[in-house]
Amino acid sequence: MFNLTYEFKLKPTQNQIALFEEWLETHRRVYNHALAERKSWYKSRFCQVNACSLRNCYIIPADAPRPTFASQCKSLTAARKENEYLKRVNAQSLQQTLRRLEKAFVSMWEQNHGFPRFRKLGRMRSFSFPQLGVNPLANGFVKLPVIGAVKMRQSRDIPNGGTVKQARVVKRISGWYVMLTVQWNVSTPQPMPHGEAVGIDVGLTSFLATSNCLLVKRPRFFLTCERKLKLLQQRVSRKRIGSNNWHKAHKKVALLHEYVANSRKDFHRKLSHQICNDAGMVFVEDLNLVALSRGMLGKHCLDAGFGQFFNILEQTCFKRDVYFQKVDARKTSQICPNCGTQTGKKELSERTHICSHCGYTTDRDVAAAQVVAIRGLAAVGHTVKMLAEGKFIGIPVTQESPAL
Figure (cartoon, rainbow, N blue to C red):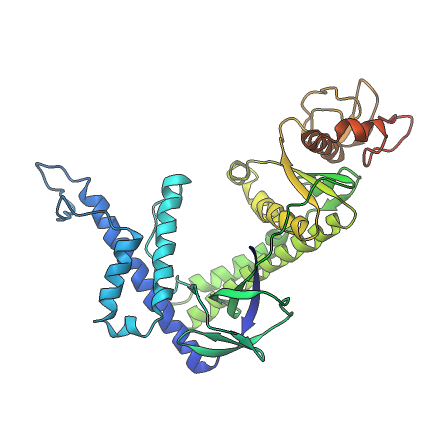
């Protein structure tokens, strides 16, 4: 099976917008009720046997089972028979909200995420349909269960042979969007190592440097708009909370944040396609992005969006039949790519790599990218062949840098 997700902007009517808003509020209440049920069960197990808590006490029978996705779905089915608001919402859509809560708890247990939080008013921004009817797309409309046909702006065609399996309606500050998951009953093999190899080193001075001597300047998306964002946030703080002017000022802040995020994603997509144009293999560093985001330069690392770029690059490589792999990132800037000698640590102000053993001179980031390419080729078993034929990418054959 092969799945792809297509995103289109919706053009709902005023009645449909009101229905979307009502559904989001119902989903938020179901999520909060299910979370409160689980939270109460957990806290009841922390109470002492011979004493009650001074702040709160949860009286739940000792043999009461832990609330799970299955048990809460049964409770939801019983509640829909009595609650009129729950009847208006698609039952499978409500179950997907409970599944989202279950996923949040699994992430807390397995990935050390924080305890799930309650959703405030307006914080629930999407709901999904796990199943759609037959032929849900027709003449620029998408047919959603219970809601009916909603007009959308289909900016591109969906290839034939696919089946629309599920849909997610998302509310953003710029409007309503639908994400359609299309499935094809085909098997797609993973790309195999072939062609020219490109190593990539990311950084803050240059966004990335490739092993074939390409340097891309880092665009400062957030820092460019930071001054304007500060001004808009000051205007929000001066408005009375909940007033119409407060909502208008808050909308301007959200629009600016969405503009920054869209600009960053557009840059990452165009750059990933540029890298894949003449490459058969792409190797990147396996970085600890969480540690980078918490360091002294965390704001600049988050502004660059290295994690999002790696994800987009991996997807682009898969679509364009380019082999993608992450390699060890340790000491890539301390090794000479020409002779393999370890040159020692460099200061951040030292931007040129000069090998004292062989005299090879190049940009520091380019040298690190070439080391990444060498490690990637070694991982796929192409190192000896590439070096023997003298086809290692990007190293010029000069007196300062003899051929490998």
